Amino acid sequence: MNRLKMNLAAITMATALASAATGMASPAHATTTSQSRIATSAASAASKVYFISSSPVTIPGCKAWMNGKKPGPKVQGLVQTWSGSDCAMRLEIDHNQQIKWVDSAGIGGSLNKGSTKFHYDGRGYKARVCVNNLNNGWDDCGAWY
Image 1 (cartoon, rainbow, N blue to C red):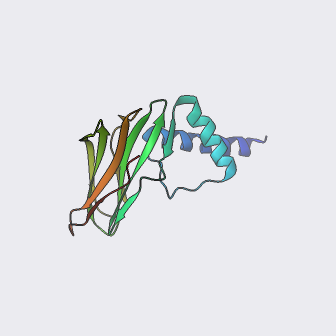
Image 2 (tube, rainbow, N blue to C red; image 1 turned 135 degrees about the vertical axis):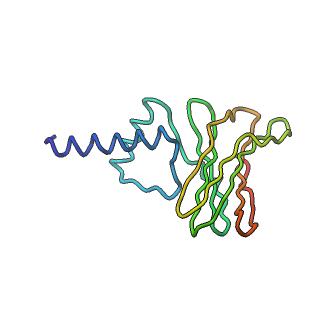
């Protein structure tokens, strides 16, 4: 492999590691096959952060979703805003039919993202995110995972 290809591979791997470390994986994020392999290899070395495809909830100006993390199992709530909306997101965990609001994140402005910490979501637990647009009162919750 020539020096340019090695440098590009190193940059791609560093970017993948930074994304995995911040837990800011996004459902809209697209990678090429070679980037996916590098990202998967890099993420597997430490921990694997992945998008939970059943989790997104979108309302005008706001979107929330969850990432999972292995080893764990753990979940994280994420929120994104656009069009100058102020959005709040909460992560709820249900264990033995006891629903608790375990964490939240709020953001404002244009194309901003926020996230919660990772929280335990093992056997007997379910999690979901709820999002609220503070400017227009819209709110909704995603599916339980």
